[in-house]
Image (cartoon, rainbow, N blue to C red; front, side, top):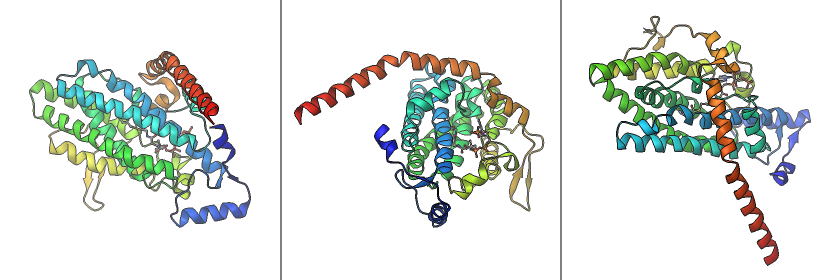
Length: 324
Ligand code: FAQ
């Protein structure tokens, strides 16, 4: 990591920055050793490390249900989904390292409570239907956001997103299949799935971040081709797609203001409770403290694995040096 960081080139001259912007405007992909403005690097480290943390913390709400899955088939699917999320996290930590940030440093920032992760993972999973809703709505939201990021200007991030989106797409399908089954099931199952949708709908809309006028990072990220759509544009795409999917299986959306606008072709929806959003982002959501406690314990319990891996790497290096 150290050696790699030394090779990174940061731009300072105005001319260089104009040339960089030209590359972005031409649709070129920026690679790790290409010169880049420090602010571009820092924005990507911020966003990609938050994304990695979200994938890792995101294992917790569903992981809670692995031992209680109602059938072997459901258990296998859930186990594999949760493992996929771990893989996404590791993949994204590696992509972040290409920008010169060490994995240890970004993980420490999370464990010290300095780094953000997605607000959505600070809500509890109260019933099995929550697992279905996470697959359908949360992965559904992630796909909409990440399909855009697959076209991001930073090569390692956009390539990571292509693979991740393929897996998220399977996650969404298994979630929607469960939703459809429960919505077509017994009155108790119907009630359970509707209750889960009622609790997760609004927090899922918050995943896309604040309104565009309150989003300090969007303009810069769009200028640099990291994002190509705004938070509100993505949120609207999510609503348009998921309202139709809900209606197709007889699920109600818990929004009295929801109505289809024939002229625009979009579903109009009510106002998000932004006080709730910022409260959760600031660490005061229903599950923030439990999530961070679980992450700290997992990190502590994994210490021996990291030490063993380091000892093995040292041994390999030594035997290579002896052989040469
Ligand atoms: N939660 O100026 P903006 C998944 C913060 S992965 C917490 O609009 P930006 C997979 C934001 O960081 C889900 N904080 O920021 C899965 C900023 O604070 P900062 C995660 C939030 O970057 C599924 C401040 O508010 N996906 O679900 C949130 O332009 C199922 C101002 O906001 C990603 O991370 C929020 N919801 O847009 C796993 C995708 N929203 O850093 C398990 C990559 C905003 O300046 C199970 N990230 N904030 O202190 C992004 O696309 C963007 O970073 C946004 C925010 C859209 C999250």
